[in-house]
Image (tube, rainbow over all chains, first blue to last red; front, side):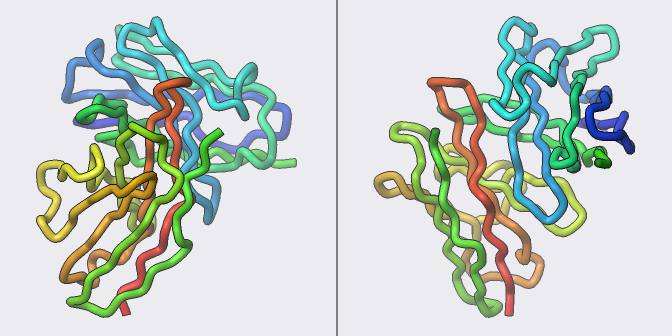
Length: 120
Length: 107
């Protein structure tokens, strides 16, 4: 199982950025995927999830209306389009496979993350 | 909304037992735990309160009492030094919730 994020970089406040997570090693269409971020020196914050078919999409309240998650079956990738970025959203953004672990959902595999820096 | 409460830090000597708690878990919901070493991505070390993923040592165990989950690390080693995060899934909203994390220091 491999997840590789890309697309991070420096953007000014109010700007946009598109993150991509290329997956391999598992049947892409069978798994839900999530984005989780971590501000420098801070804890983990869930951002968004998308179901295996793309039919169900969920966002943290803090990003709803500004971020859009999608999946591309052709490239086995999950995308996070981030608009109206804020300085406090500077963080490492991780892509993670969301799996039904027993009776609850959790992230069983993670990418190495991509750094997003939002300058004010 | 739910808030998962973890102690900011836990310190333990090598060979001793470390216990990291996670309070405020959702009733009926299971708790997962992640280990994050400096400069690395998080890694799942416990799921469904007390099940270990493949490759996780038996020294790691999990339990739950009431609305508090506990990750126990027996015979702590220097390599266990890391940040540990609890996580639950809110079935009502399908949101993933993380605790603030606990820094485990091996003295």
